[in-house]
Image (cartoon, rainbow, N blue to C red; front, side, top):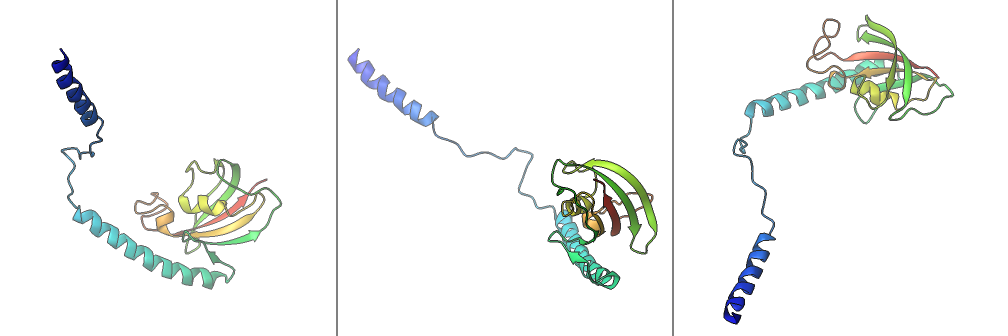
Length: 172
């Protein structure tokens, strides 16, 4: 009996130690390390288009008004009128009056809407721009296509790859 225990106990301990070893994760069989060359090419093309758009919008914004500033994200903005309300941040309810214009000045949309910041109810560039404002402020934003309606646009009024201007008033 003691000889059996001398064999079983070390065997049991070895099995216990082996079972506790963390194995490296495995890739699913349908996922390889294949590079999608089309996706890589499309990404490079869009990055080049975005760089060209940034150069164009810098010139456009500064010709329109020297008061325009470029945000870290890449859109241009100017606060037209300051209000006395609280700072806008994530999860804040806002009522905004919004005029959407083409770069040529054509009004594409005009509306008053209620939104919650952070819920992606407006394009990324505008949502980030609103976070620079206080309630009661008015501002103008020049949003590049890649922070606006992107490669797909918002047909019929906004074609793909179209940069836009937002004139915004945030109500108290």
